[in-house]
Length: 341
Image (cartoon, rainbow, N blue to C red):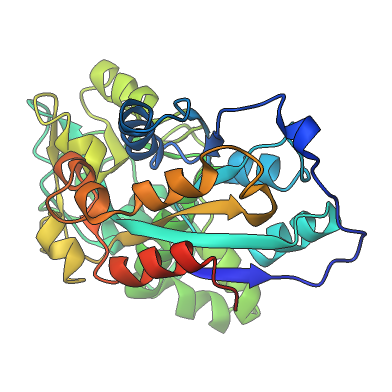
């Protein structure tokens, strides 16, 4: 957890106590992955403190951070949840609107899993190369980059089911998409030799990296802009479908879904905490420091969120699927001190 202190390019915007009095609830928005954790904490906070229960909304990491960066004042949100780190462009957008002190809080870790209908086809083991071969618009066949000819999983891997390729993946506004691209699609592009072939064809390294992340547009790869419940609904309606979920969501729907290994490793809290499972990521929330002391309960809510009894290995967030952060005590101390870099 760190606090990014930025040089303001515009005059700082002050919040007056009178203006803030129009709102007593802490307001939170952002990642659908972080949503259930934030909702659990908000409910417990409302029950255990004299402050009103925080209002927690979803919308995706990018949408939440965009709202967060709209400015300072009681008509803007206090906290943005994110399943990825804030980007430099977002930090700059915040600064342009007077949001010049941002507290970054890492709450723990989550895994990205590939799951399908419990009684559906035998999708039980994937490699990044399988996902790339299934979803890329161009793949390497006999040493040549060609338009993806594959219609079934078994077309490129005889160990996979002879089922039509259909994958429901997180849309581009989701933080999950970034992890999916970086740790699965890009890794598969390199593993198959496609990245090397792109470079050999005359592409720059940057262009080849971008090309590696493209997905086919023939209906076999479907972007899901909603939350995981929408992906689950698509899986329910398509027996041959594969969906991308957060570990916690999968673990709370094992009556409907079965999970595949990735690179031979089953996704569990243990394999994610040790780093053995290759597709994992930290989860964050971002606090608008200018709102601390003005919006009632903001700092108290942040401290409560990362308390041992909430975010620790024996807390309710861990029970729901969050992998506890080994550096949680450092995060607690930095929030308590409102420490700046």
